[in-house]
Image 1 (cartoon, rainbow, N blue to C red):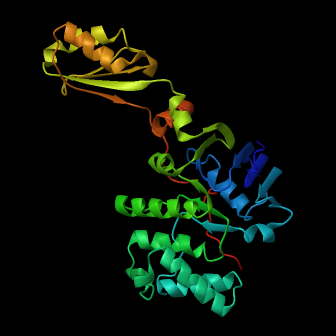
Image 2 (cartoon, rainbow, N blue to C red):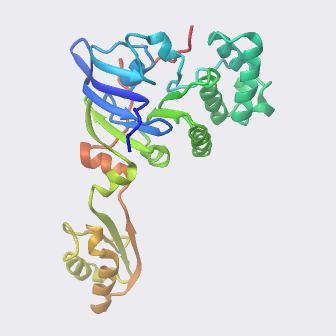
Length: 331
């Protein structure tokens, strides 16, 4: 069966700012109707790529297409198929939610009647109809973020570009936003998001691309990337802390490396390949030795483990100067 063309195609893209290389021959693709997460440490080039996709920057080399449109040759056409939400909500705090959406719709050059109609549709889609006529300064953080994303939807974009969408949201608001974004994808929207919250990528993404220093490090589905590490972590809590050394010696035969011992919690942890069925094997070994086990768990790798494995460090920190995104609306 012939595969359909990707809705976003990035081939050999390079971009430098003076002596600083932001993107170094990056190539990747995004399938239509999917959520693609772009991960990387601060300064990896994530926001630079989003700005190129949004036609706010021109690449030095390579080719970028959005919905089959070359972003350099036809930037105005690209702006007609994308929506963009930057790292921070850019809605006007003094206007109502409805007024914000109508204003943005008019900037998309919709007629007054079209702007009102599209704003009503988006408010309903956002579950913000009851708060539509309240000033945005009275909204919660989650409501403001949803409205900001909604402002990028009034032009009915096929593709939504989100740069750190959960920045500043509490856990409840973050879950609310994730549910909303999944609803958009179910209705046919393609989403490319950058994030340093790896839980967010694990929850939302159909495909994950990790970059560093502007170059591709690895890519795949979250399940593929986690399975590629080839281990799971077994944690065993003992009833008697005095038996920790003996238990650790026994479990070493199952572990890829020496087990870790937490004397205060009377707990041992080790990594082992899943094919070896380490959890039941550990229980049997300890039972035969007469060592009482209070609890035993198996934990599969997370995207945090993948990130640490391929980059040698975790995500986080402030965005360096020159790699921030200025929120843009069509003029």
